[in-house]
Length: 351
Image 1 (spheres, rainbow, N blue to C red):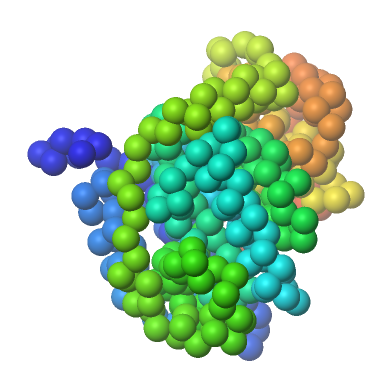
Image 2: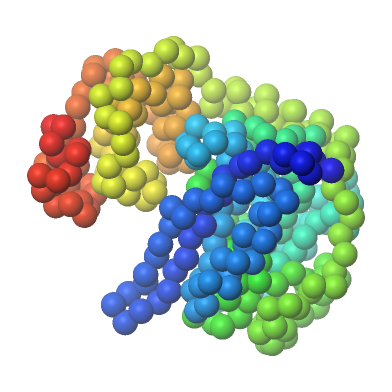
C-alpha cells in the first residue's frame, strides 16, 4: 500500500476537455484537482460522467504541489504512437518497443505490467509503471522519460513514436473517455491482439467504453535492471541539462500569472519567435521571484530541445542578469490578450 489509508497524502492533477463546434475547437484546461491515491480514479470517473460529448484529458504526471512548474512529478513512463494515415504502422512500432522493454537488459519489464491502449482515433498508448524504475516523486521526471524515449527511437522503424509529449503539463486522453470526432473510446487492449487487430476491428471494439475491463495486470514492483538504467538516465540528464545557477531569488514584483504569459508557456517554442518569447519568459520568471536555477529549469522544460543549449544559456544569462522588463505592446506581438490591455488587467497596470 503506497500510503496510509487514514491520511493519504494529497497530490494535484490537471484535467482538460475539448469539443468540436461550428466556430472551431473549444478547449478548456487548468481544471486542477487536489486528490489522493484513494479517490483519484473516482475523480476521473466523475469527470467523465459530468462531461458527456467532450474529449477528456488528465495530465500524464501528478504534481506534489499546486504549482506544476516547480512541483516534483510522479507518473508512469508513457509512449505515444501515432500515424494519421495508417494505424498499422503505429501498432508495429508499439509492438517492437514493447518487445524491447521486456528483453532489454536496460528494462526486463514483465509483459503483464505493460499497459496498451487504443487512443480513440489513430494512436496507440503504452505505459510502464513508475514503480518499475524505483522512483516515486522526481523533479525532472519528464526529462528522464524524454531521454528514455529518445533511446527507444531506433526500435520504431516507422517513426510513429511522438517525441513532443514529454513535458510537465502534457495532457493524455482519459481511459474510458470518448473521442468527440470518432465516437470511439480510449480502451485497453490485450498485448496478444496489438498487431492482430485491424483498424476496422479496433474501431468496432472501441465503441464499448468497458472493453478490456477484464484484463489483469501484475502488481507493479521495482525491476532492478530498469531501476539501474533509470540511474544512468539521471546521470545523462545532469550532463545534458542541469547547470549550476544561483538558488536565491529577487523580490517578487509580479504576484500572479497573466493569461498572455500562460498562453506563451502553453504554446511552447514557436518557430520564428522562439528567441523573443524565451527572453520574455526569463524576464517574467525573474519578476515572479524565481531563482536562477528555477527559471533555468523552467526554460529547459519550455524549450523542449527546440533551441541549442548554448544559445539558450547565452539568452538566459543576458535576460536574467540584465533585469529586462517587457511591456504589453511587446507581449501582444506574440500572445493574445483576453483583457485587451484594459485598466482592469493587473499586469497592464503594473507596467
